[in-house]
Amino acid sequence: MDVRTLRYFVEVVRQQSFTRAAEKLFVTQPTISKMLRNLEEELECTLLIREGRRLRLTDSGQALYQRGLNILEEFRQLEAELEDINDVKRGLLRLGVPPMVGTQMAPLIGEFRQHYPGIELIISEFGGLTVQQAVLSGELDLALTALPIDPALPITSQLLFSHPLCVVVPKTACWLNRSSVTLSELSDESILIYNEDFALYRQLLDAFSAHGFTPKIAARSGQWDFLAAMVQAGMGIAILPEPVCQRLDGEKLLWLPLTPTLLWQLGLIWRQGSYLSQSAQAWIARSREFWPESLIPEPRP
Image (cartoon, rainbow, N blue to C red; front, top):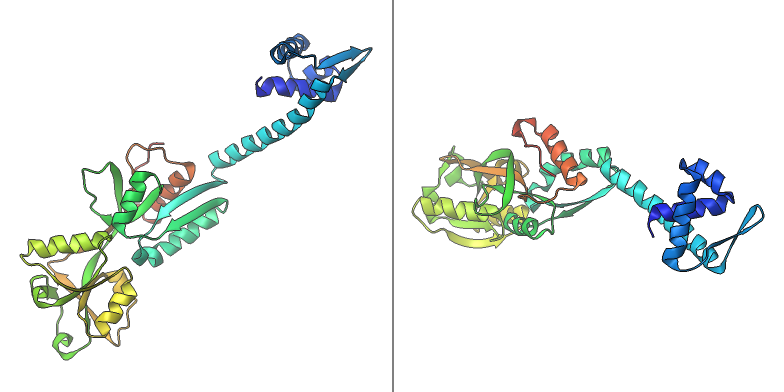
C-alpha cells in the first residue's frame, strides 16, 4: 500500500462517492475504483460496502480510515518540513568553533540567525585539531580552524581571514622600547602556549623547530585570557593572534609583532566529498558574503 492509494481511499470515504473523489483528486473514476480494488486484494479484506447511494465502511475499512487520516496528516507535515528544509526555513547546523575565535565569529553568527531563524545552530567549542577529527567523523557539519590542514586528510578548506601573531609580554622596562621580537629570541623565554589540541600549538612548535630550538613550555591552556593572566603574573610570554591581543589590558601588557611575520590563518573546513545539508550550504554562502575576499568556492551537495 502506498500513500497515493491511501489518499484515494480516504477521499472516497469523505466524499461518499467515487465520482466526487475522482473530481477532487483530478483522476478518473475507473482509476480510483481499480486502485481500491487492488488495495482490498492486497489487504485481503473488504473495506467498503455499497448500500444504495451510500458507502458503508466495514470494520477493516473503519480501522484503515482512522489510521489513514493520521498517516496522511503525518505525511503532510513531513512534506511541509522537507519543503521548509529545502527553502532553508528549517534545519540543523553543527558548527565547530575554537574558543579564541568566538568573538570574531559572533557578528556572522548573529547575521546568520537573523536570516535563518528556523535553523537550529549547535556550536561546539574545541581546539582546531579536535574539530578536524569531529568533521572527519561526521559529528560536525562544518568547522573553523587554523590553516593549513594536513593535505593527506580528506578535508576541503577555505581561508576566511588571516592576522599576524604577536608576542605578549609584561609591561616591564626590558620590553618597553622594543618594536618587534624575533622567533629566535624566544629560545630563552618561558613559553605559555595553547593546549595540544589547538592547531596554533602545532603551528608554533613547527616554527620553533624551523628556527632550531625546542621551546621551554611553562604552561598550557585552552583559554587566551588565562594565558594573558599568566603573562601578567610573570610566568612567561605568550604568542596570540593580533585580534585577541587587541582585547588585552594595554595598561599591564604589551604585544609585539614577530619577525619574520607568522600568520594565524583561519579557515572553514568540511569533509571532502560528503553531503552538505541546506543549512551548511547556507552558512558557507553567508560566509562568502561576510568575507567576500575569501572567495569561498561553491560546495557540491
